[in-house]
Image (cartoon, rainbow, N blue to C red; front, side, top):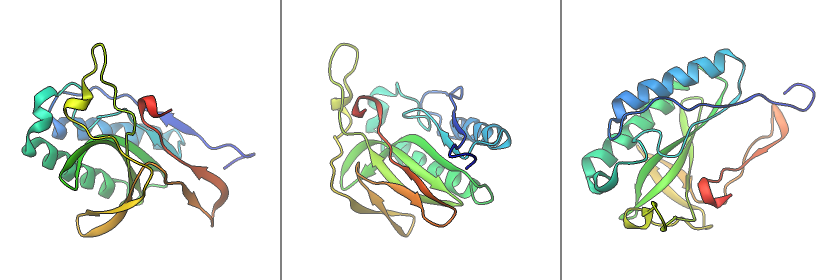
Length: 174
């Protein structure tokens, strides 16, 4: 933090629909570029891991499981970096599918933020696939580690930047 400011990067990588492997490589490139430019917080779009327009492919466990595996790969990728990364993905929790932002920091996924307001009008029909998140903060298992899952989570680092507090909202949640 310099003079009360921190550099934030919004990165929009080229993605391929239903190709988490390709998308993960593009996300890694975006992390590298933003971190090299001095960004400490890096934000990626909703559904960056899967692509937003997967339609009924969101109902396939193979796609959802691969997205979770790629989130772990991205978390691992941040291990040597001093950045906080927010990346969008579908996420299966308690037998329901959510549109989430995974929060990654220093090799860990430190939280999962579910989208609360699911648009279901005009060209949007997300309610067909996704469950709205709620304010309750629950625990989800992320590869053997319990992490918070909920829309009302505030991230802070009391040691190096005690005045910095960050929350996340997706799309119409804002």
